[in-house]
Amino acid sequence: MAKGDPGVTARSRRAAPRSKRAAGGRVGDPELVQLLTPEGDRIESAVGPDGTEYRVDFTDEEYRGLYRDLVLVRKLDAEATALQRQGELGLWASLLGQEAAQVGSGRALRTQDMAFPTYREHGVLYCRGIDPIMPLSLFRGVDQGGWDPNEFKFNMYTIVIGAQTLHATGYAMGVNIDGRTGSDDGEAVIAYFGDGATSQGDVNEAFVWAGVFNAPLVFFCQNNQYAISQPLEKQTRIPLYQRAAGFGFPGVRVDGNDVLASYAVTRTALDNARHGQGPSLIEAYTYRMGAHTTSDDPTRYRIASEVESWQAKDPIARMKAFLVKQQLADDTFFAEVDEQARREAVDLRERVLAMPDPEPVSMFDHVYPNGSPLLDQQRAQFSRYMESFEGSAH
Image (cartoon, rainbow, N blue to C red; front, side, top):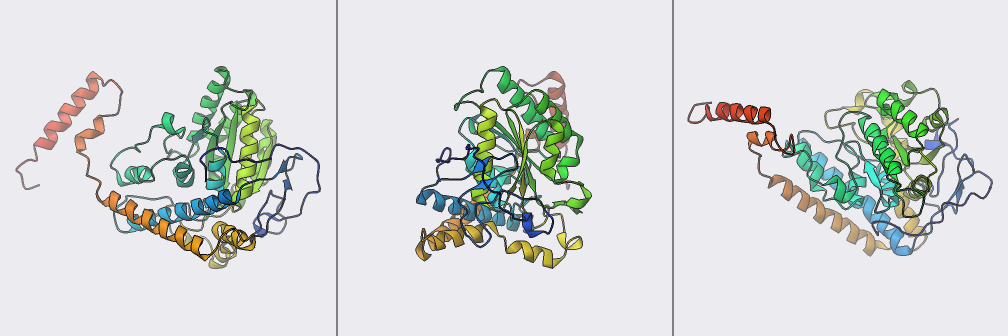
């Protein structure tokens, strides 16, 4: 799958009948944009709440590339979870079940666009061409995450819930000030967060500023149904995407387990932003199949039948079904993808285990770009403290 700009025709605003599809299969949920059913049946186009028509026009190879992305991302994520369980990582936040939302939106980004992640956007990170070892070094405590945000147009992981939406808003306001919008070559910004983060003040403040200053920003909410142990109904009285109207910009709900729809909706929102049409909110309706993080036990707050109902909407299974039905891939292709995923997972594990433990004094190295007298004093004091243990029984 090309890392950038596969062709789509998603900016058309022709009026069309809207299909009746309950989000997540729950009775009473509003419509959502869907281009691929859980059974793998292709929908030619879908219309959003404002009349925007969404569709994709991929080549056969690009369809296969999306499937490959989904499988590789899930396998690498599973390997990271296993490493944590074996004591090799301090913590891990799995994306299991959210691959389509992340790969779809990640591939929709153009080269010049900037992304602001949470701590779970491993799929978007992969789509931006960043070595998947990078977040593992962060959670292993080796470094603070080693990629260059300017090089990859992907900011560092943010642990503070919702803080990255303010970072993204400020950055997007700067894009406007620098005049980098108004054309196909313009820059757009995307900020990722979860459904629980919508209850944070930071997120709502970001909505206010982005709306008032017409920032070229897409707010991408992965609604995985739980803010750790709190279900969605304890977070909001209305669908999350409808909150955008109160801040003066459009919102849309997309089937977050549908990689095609996630791509189409995100590409349209980003293109609108880069052309100066301001912010928008995407609610990717999906499900966290595993734990919130490896320190969480989801069996304490949700039932097995709920998980099983969402397994039937698995993003990888539906994409595989689509490829089979359209005769775009055969058993040889699927076996080759599985083998590639296995090899990359083994390589990732080996590289994690080979990481050297950092020297404790290195914590002072990257606090300030040019150092400081106070920091130098603290480093010297800490060094003397560590040296006091040499030759002792401690």
